[in-house]
Each structure stands twice: as structure tokens, then as C-alpha cells.
Image (cartoon, rainbow, N blue to C red; front, side, top):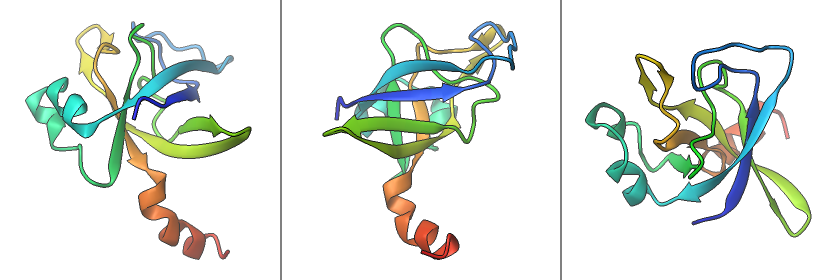
Length: 120
């Protein structure tokens, strides 16, 4: 855990503003599921499963509405990998709550299905 990763997308910013002309990117840290659950609301804890990973950014930066399906990417030994897919974040009445962890679908847990579906 604690791997530095990156997420990018064309979704809203933390205030709900849309700017679809430019993709935004930020770094984020993969955290343990225990830490993730401890920082989510009761309603969102149920989405943290063995098929998900969580990531968080101390600067309160990350994916928001419109970024779902985007990639959580990391680099290891000069090789870039898709580690997760944006699944769920927390919203408030003012927009996305980027102080909370974001839940990603764990690509590694679905690799067999991906390979079969993509005909590899």
C-alpha cells in the first residue's frame, strides 16, 4: 500500500464546475481497505469489497462526477499499468468531497474476465 498512482479525467472539479475541454490529472496514494473504511460514511463503506481498492490524496484532489470509468494508473520499473477503474466517491451538497477516499474497481481481480472478453 502507499503506492503513488495517478488518475485523470474530464469530470467536474470539487465545486461541481465542468470543463470538458481539458482533462485533469492528479496523483493519489493507494491505501488499505481498513484505512479506507475508517474514512468513509456509513453509506459508502458497503462499496469497499475484495474487488475494490481505495486511494486518497492529502491535498484533497481526485476524481469527481464524470470521471467514473477512468483509470487509476501507476508506474513500476518504467512500466505503466492500469491498476483500477474509478467507481465511487463521496459527494456533498457543494460538490465532491475530495477529503475522502475514492473507491476503484480492482483490475487485477477481473483480469481473467478482461482477457476472455477482449479475446486475448
